[in-house]
Length: 335
Image (cartoon, rainbow, N blue to C red; front, side, top):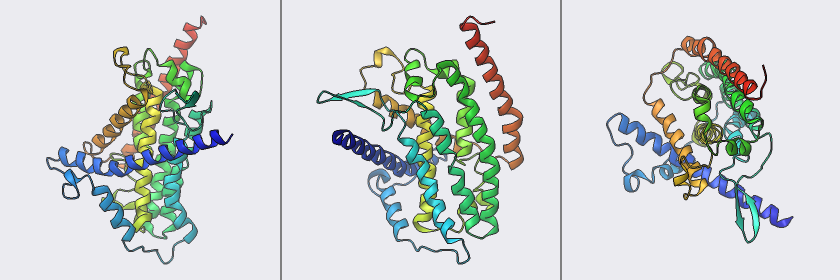
């Protein structure tokens, strides 16, 4: 019993440490990618090639003056930044980065909690993220953050629906909500090949849920003076962005499990490389894709954002589910 607890604690520390490291250097990657897309170099002065820039940013934010809006709802005002980070950390516990390893004769699962409804757990817990933006916009007692929070509510509900619909085809093919079983199903062929429409819709919905450009209407600094986090400063301000980057990592990890074969190599000839390395490489590739999209496409108008969801993506999602259902029935000998 004590050994099992110790193993779980060690896995928690490793997972959390890796996540926070990726979050810290994700901010540097964002600025470097933006710089190269815009034909400049990005941060260079803090450490070699700017590698210490995340440390400098952290020190600056820790010691920056912490201002609290005088007429804010204090409980919700302080709670909102915490809610921005916590869902990503909770979802991290059910993500398998590999199958099993054996240490000192003991078989150890490469996930913190191996539950058979991990996909449902992800959809349920990740949906709490919208409360961070809504409460942040409300608690500051200012009209521009409030508008950002209201925008977020409509945007999140719309694209959360798409996120759920995009994974139905995967569940229909695999017959399980377990992320490990979904990955095992892709040992010979990734589901990206069988479900390309679902993968595209998932990525669009994930980017929209993260409020990343071109779907960053809740922030929209050109219209809302910074949006929902206008009244925040210091580490409370930083926690919103920690939550954004942490959720980018988690969304990329879930997409890797659902569509890109998890820890399996793209070819049997490359299977000598450990599975967790393949898993992280796929996560980094999707993470880079999200950065690339942000600095390539202009922001949608709000009517375009909602119309794109309900007029185009929703019908395609339903058609994909219908087509997948027909394939499953025909394969099982029905009709």
